[in-house]
Length: 192
Image (cartoon, rainbow, N blue to C red; front, side, top):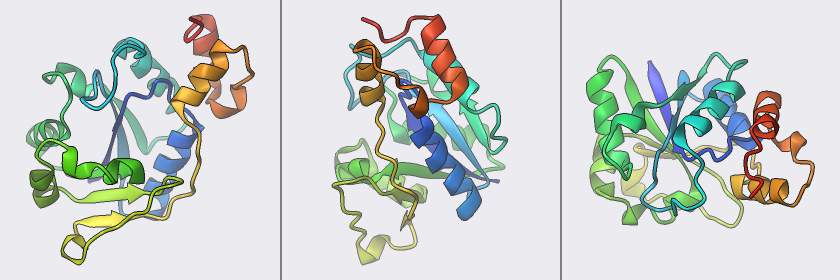
């Protein structure tokens, strides 16, 4: 199977993530998208990060009606911070029957050369780059065939926007899968 690796903090997961991943499984050669909940990204502050088990639970709740989208705690057992090259290599070792394609946004593609062993990632794994407002997807001729720009719908909802909305007592229900919204309310997440 061709697995799309969608790694992120998902703090919280929202409908933009679902639309993107569902589009990729329906309109590309990716069979499943695995949502790898990252305990700690080397490029993000840990201070505003909810507990990894809580974020994983929200991803599981969000994906219940999407059989081609899978929640994964795979990175929880890897050394922290979570470097993409380590995750991809560990996935390949654990699941040799699958091929893995990294899914990243144009915002991350614009700083990809700053990632640990980015050249090794490019050599070993295909990359699918989805659009983000304000970012151009520039792929050099030598990377064509290894890196693909995929024309997914652009849904500019961020987890930060949702957290800030909750903190300000805004109604953010429309941006979240029902189960995730209810879980956030029940557990009083992002309220302080």
